[in-house]
Image (tube, rainbow, N blue to C red; front, side):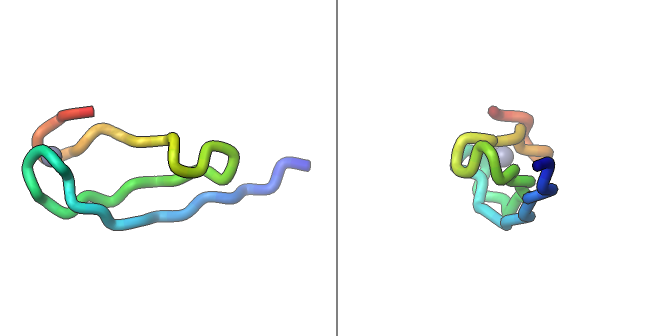
Length: 42
Ligand SMILES: [Zn+2]
């Protein structure tokens, strides 16, 4: 099975406080954190 389970969530970046859209993949729910596009922190 290759279910395309992805979800976009809007979180506040802990570094710069800006709301950042994160793409969460179903296989790694809660683990996949993308770089903040505002301040480029991980
Ligand atoms: Zn940031």
